[in-house]
Image 1: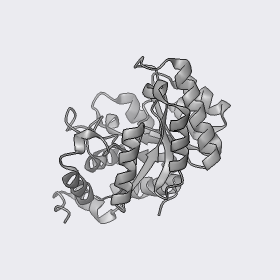
Image 2: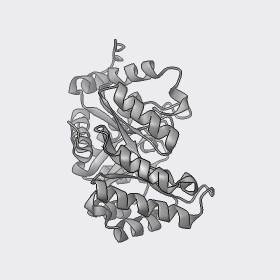
Image 3: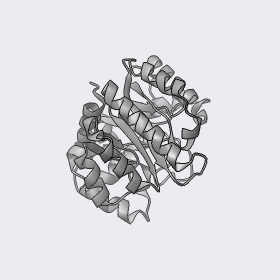
Image 4: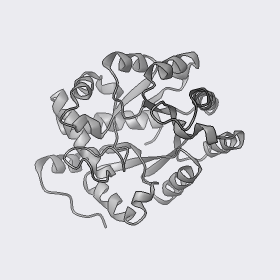
Length: 273
């Protein structure tokens, strides 16, 4: 049975609205292997009705599929992370394509470019990124973009590969409003996670306040990027409520409106009910 919801006006309103969706979670990470049921119960108690678990290599993809099969309200994505691009084979790509036929696989990703870590050379990252966009267009699924210190190249590749044909999500967006507008023009949603709640995140707050409601999503990226006031601890889907509260405050709207609209957006991009 789900645990009782926390007391408090905001928690009560969200529970009543019953509309929060965590669009990017890693419940397939080892950090959740000992208490997954409790984590899920806490999420439900905070009004989180759906969770999208993101796969980015063979082990995490397999686990994402398992969780989607096990829980009615969990969906999966399949893709290859840019940090590990050097490890991806044509067999892996074919396997990912086969998995897109699974009824609960709702997107390809996360994919993209990561210039912070140097495990995979940039040219290989770009090649793997392009191959996955091509695959997404073939199987007609949206894509989830990972971007770390590679904004210009990502925007260029999205344009060159006509990624607007499938659209997708700019995951855990931390860029400028100008970049956000370029991405939205290519049929992408802008998703915010824990960093928008950080006290020193002035730019992220300014951008979040300006993103149109019909292009806005929320996420946790758990177990990473835990929002304030739990920064430094393990993140989990229940904390998506904190992201929602922060953005609602920035936009000067009710939490119910923010929750309902971001959930509608998530359902639309992922093609879920």
